[in-house]
Structure formats: C-alpha cells, structure tokens
Length: 286
Image 1: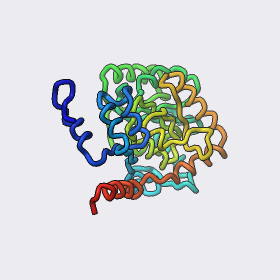
Image 2: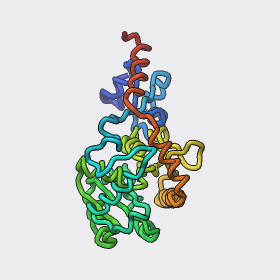
Image 3: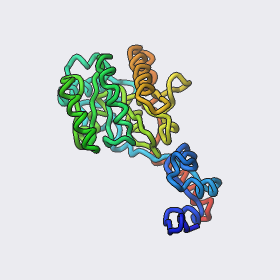
Image 4: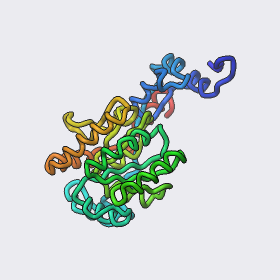
C-alpha cells in the first residue's frame, strides 16, 4: 500500500489504509478514479472505490449573502432584485465600464489566472464577446504571460473590458453581486466555491461540466435549471454557452425565474456536516 514505482508515497499510503476516503464532491470522487484526473492515484482509488465518498464543500452564508453583505451598495433578495441593479450601477462606475452596460449583460470571472481555471480559452474569445456588446470584468492573478495578454486586451477594449490584477475581498463581493453572468470554465474543479457564491447572488453561472460544477449547476434547459454548462473544454463550446446565457438574459421572465431558483439553492455547511457525521458513524466514531 505504500510502494509507488520503487519509492514511498504518503498519499497512496493514506488512501490504502484509511477506513474511509472523502473528497469534496461526488463527481470529483468518480473522476479521480480515471487516468485523466487521478494523477497516478487512480489505481489505488479504484481499488478502494466502495470506501471513497464525495461530500460537497459548504458555503458560509453569514459572509456570502446579498441580503446582508457589508461590501455591497445595496442589498437584495430572491423576491426583490432591485438592489442588484444598484450594485451593477455601482460596480460599473467603480470598475470603469461604460454606464450603458447597465442595460447589457456583464460577465464576471474571479479566479487564478492559470489554465486550470480556463482563463486561456476565455481570452481566446474576447473579440467575439466584445462584438456581442457585453461587458467583461476579470479579477485574479497568476501566470505573468496571461496577465500581460489581459492588460493588452483591456487597452484594446477600454470601457467594455476591465481587469483587476490581484485579489481583494471587497472587489470579489462587488463583482459577484454587480455582474449578470459568472464564468467558471475550469478544466478540473474538485468542488468550486465561486459558482456556489454566484448562485446565491443571482449571478447565473456558465460552467464546464467537471467535478463539483456538475454537482451544483443545473444546466439550461433542464428542468429546474440554475445556470449554463458546456463540454468539451474548448473556447467555442464556452462561447456557445455564453451566447445561450445572453439569449436567456434577454427574456426578463425566464431569467428572473432562474435567478430565484439559483438563490434558493442550499449549499450550507449544515448540509455537508450531516454527511460527514454519517461517514464518521459508519466507521464507528460516536
């Protein structure tokens, strides 16, 4: 259980001898038993498959909730979204986007500027997005080459594309509330938290069909849909999903119903904790 290609692997040892193995979403628990996502651990994980369980991460809604978020210009609820428009107006002014985008879809991306998060395929379609007359706001830091390319695009599309290199809690909350559509084109995502925040803020996600994103975003036009999903992991598939989201955004009634469903989703730690307690009891802990 400890040997790994002639060496010693502590992670493999832990998996081999643990009573139970947990990870942060059901879909990711299945993915890590494949060569694509297992990174050399797929064999031992497949052997322990009956004892591997995915339990979704939880969100602290005392911090992430537009009804009481101290970083926002205005608060709002699923039943009264007027405050979200005020948040959007404030964000556009603060971030430097043209005020006319209050009446157009504004897309948001918050995350590390690395290929894992799919920022590269997003930047590949910036010209097409700008031609769609949508606004785009990106917050993050990471690969220097991607940061430089992003800076050049901001210069090319002033007032329509804004980028904040770095991370602040205040801007993260304001972008989450002030944008309409949240982009999460991750190549892999064990669980993901930002899509859970976006659901609570009524900022409908466009997410790749991997890991915890599969478990938390119900893709349009499925019954009970709360966002938009895409596969395969290509810039064109992402563009098509964004075009679909923008099309639905133009239908106020349909968009409003989706926002309400999204904001009512419960991904609290209270829910996740019950599953962990159940696992502990299975292995004999009181």
